Image 1 (tube, rainbow, N blue to C red):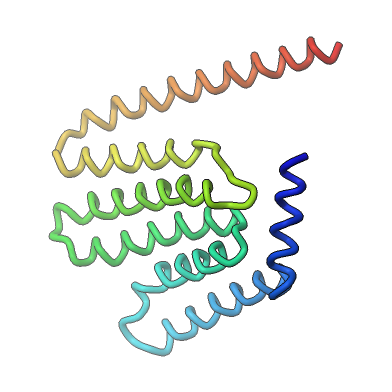
Image 2 (image 1 turned 120 degrees about the vertical axis):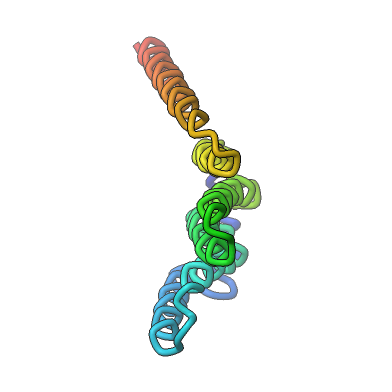
Length: 176
């Protein structure tokens, strides 16, 4: 019930200034303009993903829609990784890229708390931890860390599956 009340307040806030559908349209226009500019001005191609991510961040700050937070975090992390890894020395460029991508997923989780309604699901922390571990593995030149990471991810997936299965069975018994 509180979710629908919160949702209604968000819609009324956004609709009072600019219809929500218009925000989506403006985001698409901005992304199109960014792509055209990258094709017309040499040397701007590396900045496309960062610009698209920041466009989604502005849309999120305006609407507080979680979907924009997801796009903003992931695409901005990816874009920052592309730019910063191009400045890093060759053995470190992969580490920089992976850590930026991890930071993007971490940003999704943080922005979720600012969304309306707030999104507290920790799902972005899983890819953030994976990409951070890969970045650290590259930085420390310890490929064995990735093997441990694969096992840890498998354990987490099995545990999550068992929890979902058990939760579903409990719900079914309560309904019967």
